[in-house]
Length: 139
Length: 174
Image (cartoon, rainbow over all chains, first blue to last red; front, side, top):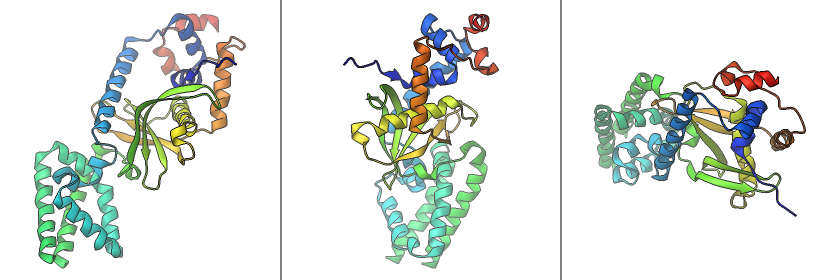
């Protein structure tokens, strides 16, 4: 039995948006305004940029979840020490869990800001180093 | 111990102050996707059943519990969701569900649109997905229209018509 040609998702979206436009496009080719074509070109560029961003391991989660990751790196000793403190001490107490959840709510925005502003990054680094040295003294 | 917690508290307060300053640019964030693993990045999927369909999925994230979440990048400023967006993400779900690699894996009945704006920080908008039956119905309708068996329905949207080059023949036909 002959297999029917697969419909593309874009085609399905076009027919769901405006059937008349989709049919005219099929018959006479896409005719759009200059602004529309420009927006489509910019959209393709944004897609490629973000695909590269994800391919290099900077996904939706990674850089924005942990300020320590953004400042020290994912596999740095400092990051590991902070993770250890989070899992072994903070998670055990109610107040600690509240602190973690608050941190997770704020961290993505701060991590992004740290990437942009060296000043904020330096302030955060200083604060985190204070926490780290206090943790090391405890050991 | 007390010093550590006090320092950590200062750190969180500092974070809160900076977050308040940068909040207008940051937009709503998806805590859910933090720590998620990207399992598909700009990949083309093809299926023959239940309908012959193909599409390039932007990204699929596997959450810690194994749930798969579909995201799509849009270069838009506002957070408005169109029917086309819902159809697109739902069609991607159908593709994933029937692809050998992801068969049997749980897929969320929602997705996210990543609105990148124009050079602004990305913000994610949650999109409820359509059912599989609805996508199949839309596919059948598209096939029928393509085969000229029924009259195509125009979308009476001024915004859509403004950017369309088929305005005049379309108005004449209708």
